[in-house]
Image 1 (tube, rainbow, N blue to C red):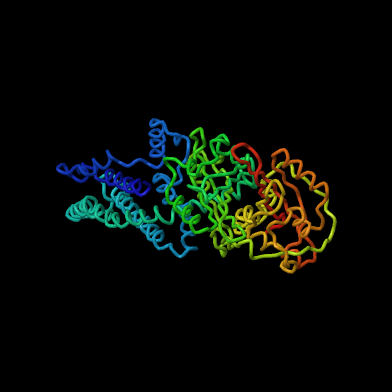
Image 2: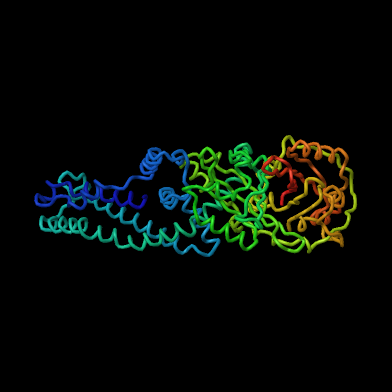
Length: 513
């Protein structure tokens, strides 16, 4: 796209140069048919191409006409040749020791620029020094002028076109490799960064952070959804009876990239955590970018009982190609930091870890956040830390959780992140599974007040999520002999009849990670 645009610009300069027929006395020489045909079939500029692509989508009746396709070839070409986005993708590749292809393409672009500069220079020499009307005509013998004109004609009609095409095949092959390999990973990474940064400005732009969960059962055929939160229903637009019991693939559509779907499937088969960016579709047919976190939940025998999925709708700020470029231009300002998505904590079974009571340090009265979910905590903290910490915060929004049985509020499952964050000096011989959630919190908190319990229970009885502050003794706070403030998010998971079956309890520290 941009490469073709540059080459066509070069051809226009050739046209301008060879059009001085009276000067060159080239009555028998016209612009070659090949050049004229090239001009007639000139590839569209990125903006023109995007416009026609949108028109084609609109004409075809798809819902993509108002949706920017991150993984479309049009966008890829724009990203590849836009200086800002190309630089960010190069940094991304360099951090992963796979930048040679992008470095090659960068040199090819520089090569094309030099050819354009050469063409422009020849045109300037002709205009200023050689042509009959040149303002700075040089005094040359007619034989020299004749030879010069012939050499220029040869250069323009033969040499430059050959130089122009010498790297084309290699460039096309390498672009194809980048398009299918590093580019999709770069897009997922940049969208995650964008979500983290944008949440600092307006959390309302993102749906589902902290209250959009579903629970799937791999022991049943096709690993169907068995429970979902109200937030999941809201984000997808489907009725609960249309969600349960179906496999999550019903959210996929024609334009969903199969590569992240395969990676997600492999992670599920391998009983591993996974973070993927998927193009999903609401019931209305409206596409949305879904930043999806999936983790296995192990039973006491070490077998996977369920998979828990946490979702964020990232599309509410992505409407056009300008938004895409803005997102893909986000930069990590800390040069020495890698921009990898943070490594996920290793999954642990419920057999591994035990706890004992924490010491109490100070009393804490329950404080309710303005609304349930993780949004407010992320909003308050995300803009205060550097990018690497933002990415870690974004991931850990889901990495510290408990899954409770609703009828007893006893712990059924827990994450490795919960264990990692607590003070290791307080670990003891008490098994976590089967422990009452409030008793567990009391072991690790200064106090769990009646007010805290009553607010949680009242919200859960109403089937509503709730977020409350709580002080816990952690691995970090133990160094200072104190405690650390968390926001605890309680989210009901309901079956197809909207009956609450499980509670997802996530914990987000209010201290920068």
